[in-house]
Length: 567
Image (cartoon, rainbow, N blue to C red):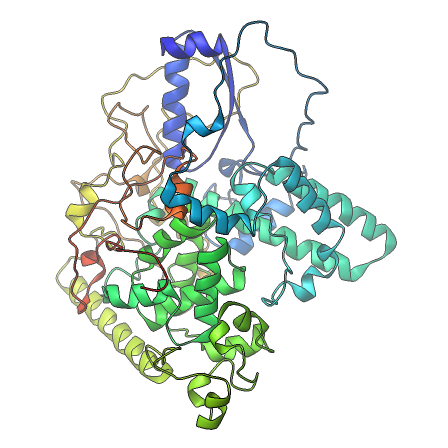
């Protein structure tokens, strides 16, 4: 800390994030700075609303997006407008040391190829972000309601990477959209009004992901609902590799996975389709997919990833039912009717007529020959047929129901398990599961303008189960919503907010740690180079059985070997 006193003087201002891990990290930083005699002021720049301000009439957090977002939009006060930048900056009177950017070694030789590929699709920086926002508000926003689900062209804002890296704030986007909305209302433009509401709803999903993470901090490890606890996931690394490489035999899925690798981005609809295939067709653990998205997406966002994957897996009250299977062939003709998206990312299918573009396995032999396609050679046959996948999913659901009934009969239904890991692995996670023991209790805050964050000393006494009391009926109607109670000897973050300041044992993934997934790509290094602290997954054995295992036996993430598409 003396180093910081020399470098930054007596005042530090920074913006907080609301996920539990970052709150604990920021609390530690704040505590140490204050103890070193440095005044600290924190601000909310990541959210429109503080997550602890949005509750139902009983003071409980919402567990369905519709209720949450309606509450947000019905609030009397709009979110604070972004603060304008200063007209000028006062020059530092002393000497500022500097060095060439090359000496920072922000990328190594193995990363340059991947970064050059990404540079073709993205232009980082505040100026580029502002231009992208202005172009969207004055262009595609008008027709967002009618075009946002099309995947064959740039129909969305493409602002999420700029949001992720802080080049745009969510408040700036919100108020720009609101100002445009006021203008269109005066003009009586009803079509544009619908587009604005739909886009604000998309912003609301980002807000909701952080809201869930704050109120239910266990969701990055296990499902919000306990329905997946006994699901027999297939720990098949062969399936996982084929999905990553975009060689499943389903053109829309494969096109999406290849776009993800090439650009670091996916249209939201394609994200839904590839994750649905991952969970429902291949029955791979949703945590594997979540981790891969974190490694590869430019806008990689732990909270949004958790929300999306749990939504698809049927483990949110208002998510997709687990038994729901969307046929990629039908989804292709719905969202890419002319096959332009598939042809762009699967050049081997570029000469195939639109009639067969989303199901080449049904094309007559002469059509395949004319298109230069040899199934099983230059384009794979489907890794699993739709009918077989549906039958296997129904069998797994039956098995899950039976296992749950057996556990209840044996009195084991109230234990806590993590989706995609063994209990022993959960105990070995790098994030301290008891970060608040044996720590000092008082942290003074010297600024009256400090963000009003709930005290880490506060004991809320709210269990995860109590949050479903008034909202469970808004989601799944197939049965009662259940939330597993904890073992008497286990303390989980799902049952309370941090009750004391963190101990020095808190750990996280930083830029100088070795990634837990050995995939040697610039994507993973890029996603961790921003210094964010996030849960660290431990290493596991190099091979896993491909037979069915229950949810408590699934490894957190498999060991990836190589991420070159041609392997």
